[in-house]
Amino acid sequence: MQFDNVIFDLDSTLVSIEGIDELGRMVGKTSEIQTLTRAAMHGDVTLEEVFEKRLQLIQPTRAHMKELSALYCNSITEGAIELIASLKQQHKNVFLVTGGYKHAVIDVARMLGIQQDHVCANVLRFDACGRYIGFHTNIPLWKNHGKTEIALQMLKKYPGKNLVIGDGMSDLELGLAVGTFVYYGGHVWRERIARSSHHILKEKNLLKILDLIDL
View 1 (cartoon, rainbow, N blue to C red):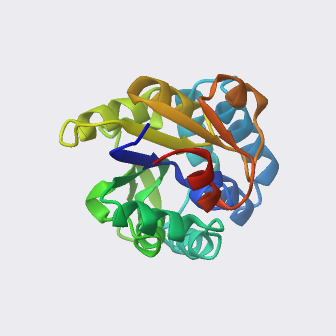
View 2: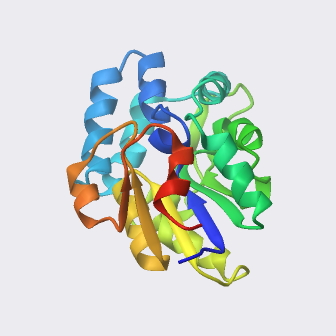
């Protein structure tokens, strides 16, 4: 089966890190944030339950976003840039749909070769001093099934067969809703996600997906 649209997750997929965990580390709340993140990624609690709670714990600033952006750019998964370049050469539409924060995502998306209007992410709000004051709730990525909601709207402009590549429950939900899901377990293994996936890639090199699926 060949695909027209390929949708990637970011954290623990196109990059080796989890951005929210890195933000937790920056403010000395690593354990609390990782516990909440694991519960959400495994589907044990809803995303709504942990999204705002994590941000309230961290109180991220614009400076934190800049630091996270640099971490993302230095943590790109092996083979990710080459895979996206190959997809674009085959005239596939490539998208990035992430529950991460746009201020930190823009630069790594550019490095990966994903055009900015194909990037969907949460947007944080800051005051004039760069302090966190909230997030834009009209972007549904902060809640359960938010990735599916925003992707379905986006894909109306791009008819065809869809492939989703990611590592979390929200990615699985999206893949099952719009087409085919590949669980990328090269960085983090989640047995519950793997059991429900159409395909599984355990190798760290994302380019190996070309051996797994006829894109």
